[in-house]
Image 1 (cartoon, rainbow, N blue to C red):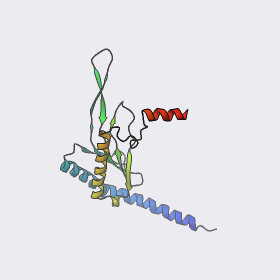
Image 2 (cartoon, helix red, strand yellow):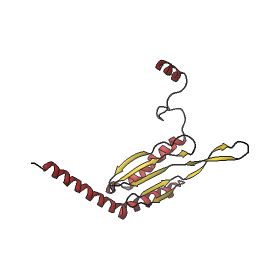
Image 3 (cartoon, rainbow, N blue to C red):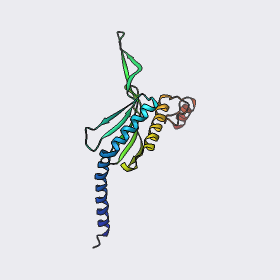
Image 4 (tube, rainbow, N blue to C red):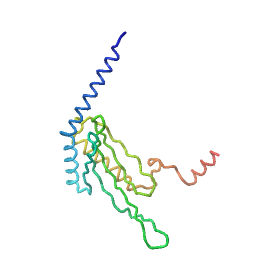
Length: 181
């Protein structure tokens, strides 16, 4: 019997396990500091109203996020029978650097969301990198892309419904539904 294929798969498996150990060490020794300091510098230099948040309650699944915070959205539910209003809270979005189970880093955008107003847009994964691949210019590019996505979300209108994944409304939509019947 020839075990060459199995031997090569075992070698690849062991290499991946070793990579995971190496990547985890790099996250703790270098990458966390790089992400944190770069985001802090971007916030300071750009006067962006944001803060860096570290979630490290789970070892080797840590998260560093640049959050735009939460606020009262300006939308409020009028409660019946009195003059009290219940404000809807808005999460303004975050750029997330997530340490994955295998030590790689997933970068994603968490979109703004107004509680009680529709469903939140799913996060957008920008990239998954090995720790040694993450450099300052990449972080700057991710922040730029994050801000562009947030600007588009905040400036939403009906000029580009197909880009937003919306169905057309109006005369054409009625005609299309009638054709389906």
